[in-house]
Length: 107
Image (tube, rainbow, N blue to C red; front, side):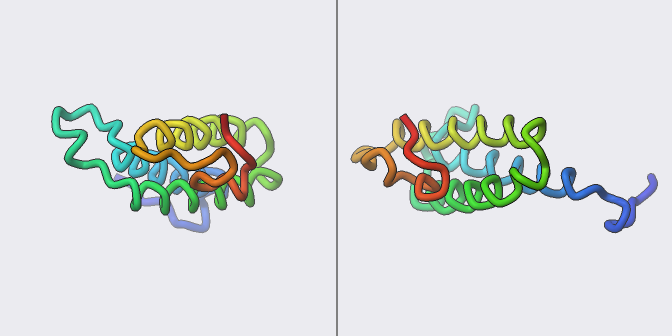
């Protein structure tokens, strides 16, 4: 198996990979895991941190990576923001949820 030197990896691959890891972790922390113990894995405090960090990454990277790559990341982020609101026993007001200070209110 050949290992690629980090210098050979395009920035979009690194950004996308980091975003996908954060999305996956946030989904699990929102209780969206496919396991039967998904509710046991739910941790909304951790999910909030991950979604906010993801919002920062996507917002900062979007102008650099172009809409072709940014659009699916924004869609995933929005889906997580809505899932977080749905999973919360006391949902944040629109504009106050995780990452919404960076993305704007999510409805």
